[in-house]
Length: 104
Image 1: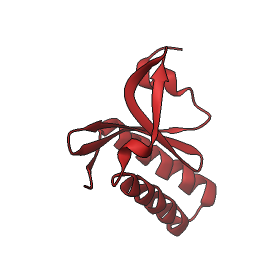
Image 2: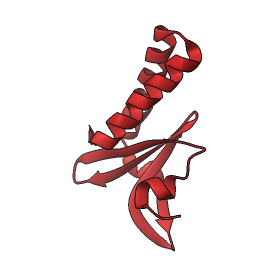
Image 3: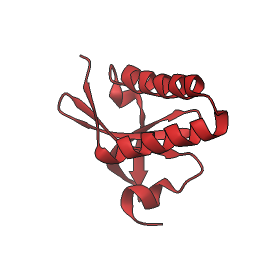
Image 4: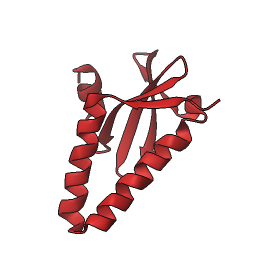
């Protein structure tokens, strides 16, 4: 079974920022488009087996989030019924706990 993939508004904003960052660095629309296409493909592949992502635990409890790494970013998602919901795409160097839970 392949899960339907849904991007939250936050994840869409994250990917818009990634577009801006990659374009600023590369100065090339083709490179930027390829980078984002590869990221979306990696996410789509995970839709075939989303529970193979790494589960995220906090204080010993499963948070409901799974994550995968794509180059300099971590993709956080949840699984609900037949849907994989991409919640955030966060640069690896950022404090994802603050972004996801508002806690340090």
